[in-house]
Length: 202
Ligand SMILES: [Zn+2]
Image (cartoon, rainbow, N blue to C red):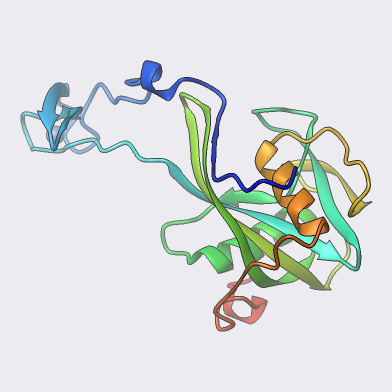
């Protein structure tokens, strides 16, 4: 797989609108009404004016590399329980995406990493309830011992360029393939945010 892809869709997103609509206003608990606003029909509160905008969830996924090996974990959550994936997670509202990546790797693997490059950016239409907008990052291990946590129940280093276990996401598959074939080194990242010293410890 040497082509580059940035949009991954597992379903017809046009046919699945409305799955995430609120029924009641989160501000004042009034029933919401579907109203044309800004070119789309959206849930709007007639009492306080709240408008529900539904957006993809910003996330990061991290290719953690040590020598010629990549770190993968077996997923415990949905979707694709039991398949393998890179460490990943949501960006908190008060967090920059580089710090989020460092935090997620620490939480899911016990390792402290430095973010080295941006490898890809992707829209992932997983299901009507899961639409991620993800930044794919390259990270190197600084220190720490592998420690399995809840999201990834098994962690293992796999040699780059060798067959991988069954991966949950095509996004990971493509990124690992392109990286291991030397097709990408990625964009440089802002070093002020790419190190753990900037991240609050938990
Ligand atoms: Zn309201």
